[in-house]
Length: 351
Ligand code: FES
Ligand code: CO
Image (cartoon, rainbow, N blue to C red; front, side, top):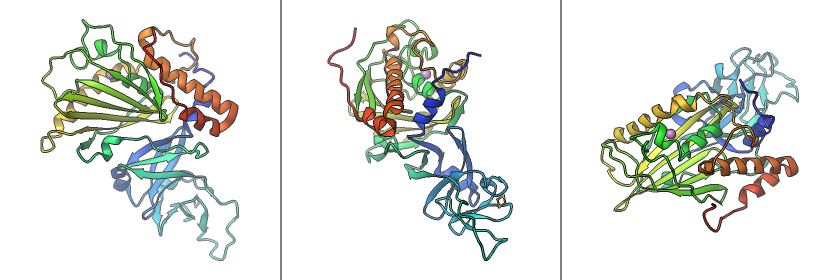
């Protein structure tokens, strides 16, 4: 296997500045009162609803390293199952049962992380220094839309590679012949890619397709809240709009968990199943390719893989990731925030 490029750990450091979903609210509730064990960017975390506050801490008790995720939530805090140490949402140890009169060592404080619930997903941010926000999903706030969540899935591939696949226009003809693309139309358009409000944006018009599935064909507006989210708005004509939103949460450098929803402003009373089933067909087509990229890690060195002009979206995505990495290196998290906020609108399609 090719060695991952040298930028890997820096990429992890960059991704630590962003919010990523770690589980659905249902998944959290299903294990309560136990905390849920998750991994984000290589860190094992214990996540729990501590009674109105969702909290995330390192999943390792400071005493003898038992996982807090095999303990339970007790009086708004994490209770370790081994000797009962109890940790407040901010990670501070507030009780050592074998020492009822104390003292609690002043250093007995677990690392805790920013955690928030939005749209039934629990998001965690490792490092708040860049003042980032959870990725937008406008369809979820749009009351004209019926929103249906798909089942999250874990693939052994880096989150940025998952994002690239989602926005790769040249693979439709090959991987999705007959569903999203046509083998007899292998030349995709090369879109103008803009940067606006911390998102990459471009438009795409698919070829005419014949399918009886509940398919998403029509003028497609792509928004990519950096670094790991894609929201595609489909205009099916006649006022019918659909959305496909996906965020790839980086479990580590070589695997990710995708959380996704579909939304529609028509057919509110209809069956949701066909809308999800079409995506399952697409995922089944993508999986054998995307999970067999070797290495699974994202390669950001421009010489690491060959690109051609029809890779425009990927090239622009990698370019922005490299610029964010350079900003982090040169000016720290504040420079990343500035590099995210800098819009760039090309005047015309590049040649
Ligand atoms: Fe957690 Fe001892 S290992 S209390
Ligand atoms: Co695909």
